[in-house]
Every structure is written in structure tokens, then in C-alpha cells.
Amino acid sequence: MPVYRDDAVVLRTHKLGEADRIVTLLTRRHGKVRAVARGVRRTASKFGSRLEPFMVADLQLYEGRTLDVITQAESIGAYGAEISQDYAAYTAANAMVEAADRLTEAEGSLQQYLLLVGALRSLSRREHGPDLTLDSYLLRALSIAGWAPSFEDCSRCGAPGPHTAVVVQLGGVVCESCAPPGSPRIAPSTVHLLGALLAGDWAIAEASSQRDRAQASGIVAAYAQWHLERGLRSLSHVSRGTAPE
Image 1 (cartoon, rainbow, N blue to C red):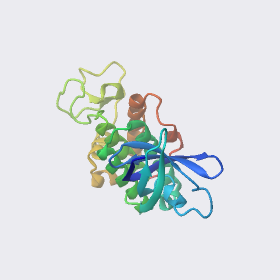
Image 2 (cartoon, helix red, strand yellow; image 1 turned 90 degrees about the vertical axis):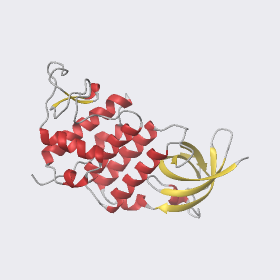
Image 3 (cartoon, rainbow, N blue to C red; image 1 turned 180 degrees about the horizontal axis):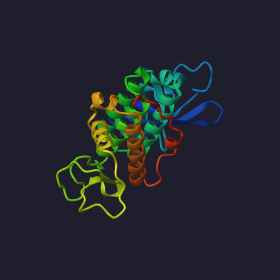
């Protein structure tokens, strides 16, 4: 059977039999892959700890009829242990890998892979608040998938902003002419924060107030749920941090 090698992020795992595990991976070149890791639940396993959620590894696999089989695993980014020590980071990471699982298929998506690896690395190093990292990741992952929101010009007619009416079903902020009756309004500072999260402008994001972060998180969650249809179950468990006003 063909053997191949690829870098991969572990998205989730399931027990199989007494000692095996099914591992769902987002790979650098082969898209999303489901593979069997044999014997990894035994204490003597050489690479069981390298195949836990949020870990990044260099894997060797061979193609099976239904599931591929992992034969080697070398750690690239041991982010799982660091993330699991912090509840807010852990819940954010769970939402990220669930989103990556939903947004990717068998075809390769290098951008999605690199974005997820970068976000998990950032969480493990405590570079930014977990809530900001999660919201930025979701907006950028949805953009890569073809659902880029607009937080400056009107998402419906393109009228130059700034605008404060937001309609997630229409793709972001909308002008007064396009805003349906009763459209929710958000503070200009919240719109500014959303734009910063989408662009990865961390100086602006870190300086934001807790009120703006909470409002932005609600909009990001609604936008993700709208495009992913069933929404992300992990979002209900995300621990939101606090920031000085």
C-alpha cells in the first residue's frame, strides 16, 4: 500500500478497540485525514502522547481501504500540554479544532493548516488573550473558506464606511440604506476591534475594552453559526477572559 509522509495537527481522537485510536488530522498537503494509530493507548506506546489533540507532528502513514494507518510520529509542536494547563486556552483550542474540522475536507488547504498551527502556538505561548485569539482565528478561517466579512464598507452595496449596523446574514456591517428594520447597532470601537481581529492587528485588539470584546465575540459566534449551519458546540464552553476598561 502507498506510504506517505506529512505534517499534521491532531483535531480529535476516538477510542478503537482496547488499545487503538482513530485520529482526525488536518495535514499540510493532504487536507483532512482520518487514520488509525495502533497500540497508542498502551503504556508502552512510543508515540501515543504525540497524537493528542492540539499536537503538531511529522507523520508517516500508509493508505488503507477505509482509514489510513499511522506508523511513525515525530513531534513538531507539543502545544497540547501547555494549552491544557489553562482552562480558557483549552476551551478556545477546542472551538478552533472543531471549526477546522468543519471547514476542511479531503482536499488540501495549506492556509487553513498554517492558520490553525499559528493559533495553537499562540495559545500555548500565551501571546494574546485566548478570547481574542479564538475570535481572530474564526474570522480568518471563515475568510479562507470564502466567507470573508466586511467591517468597513457596506457588505451589501459597498458604500464606504464606517457603519455601525451589523447583519451577519448579509456579511458584516451595512449602511443605513441597506440595513433591515431593527438591525442591531454596535459601537464604532467594536467595529474597529472586529476589523483588527480580521486583520491580525494585535496592538488594537489588546487595547480594546471588555465591553467591546464581549460584543465582538457575540458577533463572531453568530457569524460562524450562520455559515456553519449547525454552529460550533464548543463555543458554549469557551471561557471568556476579562480586560481593563
